[in-house]
Image (cartoon, rainbow over all chains, first blue to last red; front, side, top):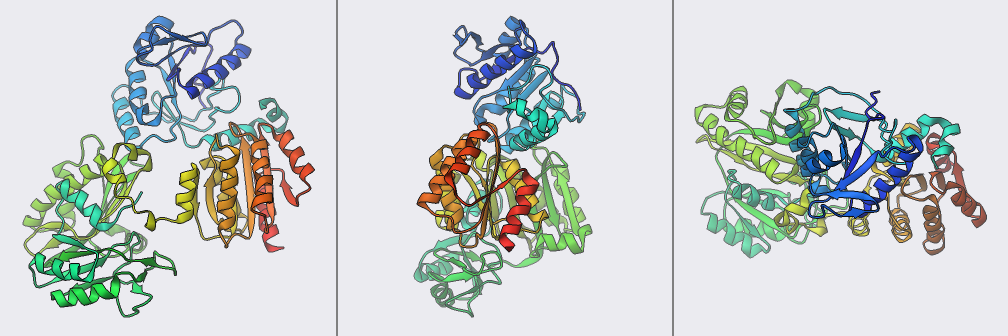
Length: 180
Length: 395
């Protein structure tokens, strides 16, 4: 298991002005505040065309590069609709994000192959298994990924519900109650 | 999503992949005209259904009639077509109920020198698409893989760059093709690989892939399956959808926003999440049961969708027990129970029901179940649930 998220993780949300993007960003921010009180871990988001606005306190930028430069973010979580996901992941990689987390449901296979190809030139090909919850958390209770296949900076979980189930069981019955 | 052979060949032809000349016929007269318009002394009349095994398949109403036949005159084409159209073809893949044939594809006869196999899929190990070929054309590839795996050639290719001509030659030489056929393969194989990527296919299978006596490589059959997640950018493919070929319950589920796949077992499953649904089916099998379906209600289903899910499961007359397995993350357990009680009232459960709930609002859900007084078997975890549902079935 590799720890991918640390105290220095700073996260932006691609697609932050969408329903899911905002919802999960809010939940993550709540959870991060418990882990690291007083530290801004979730520092903003990106929606092309809505740069310069804010949504529930999150500054919104037009591009990932701009968001990184203005907020110091090193991690992105991708909450754009599946047809635009590959492009969003590649934009994040191009902008120098060290870790990119995307939920793969609904993304065409061919798009993920293109993403893989696009990332090959700039990343290592080590495989790790990881549980993405350590410090900042991906979400308060259910967007935890336990078995994660890592290729470079892209984390690919093989199953959302399986991961929930796994992380729930992994915590054991005593701790599981704390999840809910 | 799947399409018919004649539709696949239209797309392949447009992509520059060589296919035989063919004409669609929906009446016996059209089949006769098709024979004449092809201008040869030999043609093949092929039933158009999504299932395979058509050549060996037989019609319920015309037991002597095969699903694919060679004909040598317009009259013969007409007579065969009359015995095929409107009748029910049963093949190894249709199940006993068979499929009604409403369209025929009449194709030119070819002088065939070699019959090969070609398949393209995305291979997890290779991390990309792989072109699979075999000298054993016309056979089930699974059988070849089981009995003579050395006859299967695999060539991974890059989804962006496509298959290089040297890769096509490598395969052609390994298959023992002659000089003319190698040149034909050098054009054919990269084009069909490009088609696979450009059309977001999850499978393209040409069996048999033929080499004619004059060295031309052509797709004699064509089976194409598309990645449903990519259909948004292939409107031309969506237009080819034939709902009459799809499982009605699956169409109904898809319309409701549920992922449902009908299977042959007798334990109906309702689960949230595709991964958990597969684990649930694995555990049912591990404990000696057979799942009747895969059903993922998804993360954000509402009560109406879940009620419809129960309706779909219970509409399957094979279902003798139902297992509900919910690990509520986004999905709230109380919504599931509320829908379940609703289904009890509106649809009625005449089979044992095992419920395993965990996660968001689980206490509230359990109280609702208890208060309802319905004879529901509660399970504590996934293994317990699988064991209980198999036991309930055998009780």
